[in-house]
Amino acid sequence: MRRSIITVVGKDKVGIIAEVCSYLAKSNVNILDISQTIVDGFFNMMMICDANSANKEFLTISDELDALGKKIGCIIKLQREEIFESMQRI
Image (cartoon, rainbow, N blue to C red; front, side):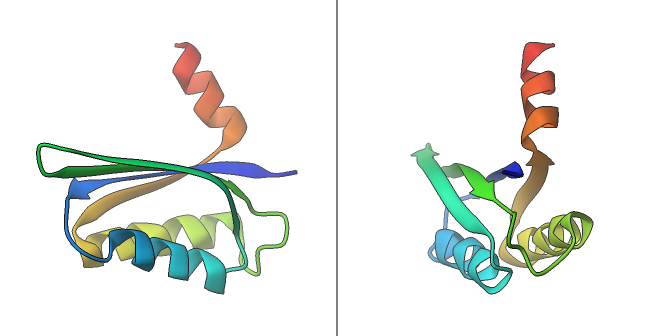
């Protein structure tokens, strides 16, 4: 399974989760786990996803999530699980 980590950070507003989840559904990316919190008006979400059946290349999804983040006023980052784990060890 090609698992990926998506992080979303930004000022809280209505529709952030809906926008991101709608994009992932259209791209055929399955959400395995999701955690979100709001601290002092700032939204933070981390998702673990399975991209095995994605209908787009990883870099395309990454670029499109970046563009979506700009559209909704958030920073959205997509990382492969192994890269994310390596960064957490440093």
